[in-house]
Amino acid sequence: MTLSKFRLDGKVAIVTGGSRGIGKAIAIGLADAGAHVVLASRKLAGLEEAAREISRRSGVRVLPIAAHMGRMDDVKALVEHTEREMGRLDVLVNNAAANPFYGPIQKMEESIFDKIIAVNLKGVLYLSIYAADAMEKNGGGSIINMASVQAFRPEQGLGMYSVTKAGLVMMTRVLSKEWGPRGIRVNAIAPGLVQTHFSEALWKNEKFLSQRLGRTALGRMAQPEEIAAAAVFLASEASSYMTGATMLADGGSLNG
Ligand SMILES: NC(=O)c1ccc[n+]([C@@H]2O[C@H](COP(=O)([O-])OP(=O)(O)OC[C@H]3O[C@@H](n4cnc5c(N)ncnc54)[C@H](OP(=O)(O)O)[C@@H]3O)[C@@H](O)[C@H]2O)c1
Image (spheres, rainbow, N blue to C red):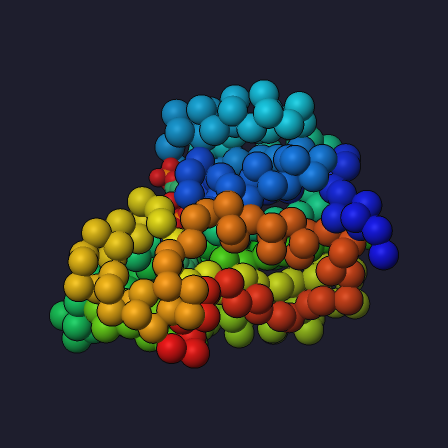
């Protein structure tokens, strides 16, 4: 086994939510391993900035595409645009997610339920379906879903988010079973608390943070870069016998 198994030279990857945070760190990791990368999120300006930074650093092609993961037309167009511009698709990282509500689940309005399901589950499923068709043309590929430790241990106030992440873990298992024969591997990563814009309300809340770190074996939050290597591994031939799995990267918080 050599490190060359981790290389992704000539491969094409889509990373949703690639303009910042964990998605951007993963895009940097994939580009450093040699992959050309398509960055997708809602706002083009942030994507363009990240794309310039990553291509300058790694010398690969980085294409920014604006797409809302809760809009199925955008989801379909993202794969079509990628195939047209990059010629192929090998890796999909379903990283974008929404958490539009914090509080007791009975106070959550129906429109919020629809939004969180659309972005965190429906968009992921349909993007995976279109991506799998594109990957099959080149003999297969790898899909990586960004779950969360919340899938296994719900946090007060984040109930519906946890439901969608648990759904994503099962979606990973279902798709891996159905698509293994097509040469498509589907795995997930479940991070603990990572210091990003998304989790700002949590880590800026001193009471929450000290409680959370108190039951985290490593006693600290993660930085986005600490999640990226798991995605490079799952994207590459180094993980060729892994499918349907969820890798925990939670600093030990599930056991606390
Ligand atoms: N941070 C944590 O503690 C933590 C822990 C466990 C799991 N996660 C998961 O990790 C993933 C990334 O989170 P993060 O912490 O890196 O967040 P982040 O830094 O806030 O980045 C979120 C990214 O997603 C994009 N995005 C948001 N809504 C979108 C939508 N509807 N369609 C397309 N793109 C969208 C954002 O760009 P635009 O604004 O341009 O759309 C941005 O690029 C999420 O799946 C999250 O659930 C995070």
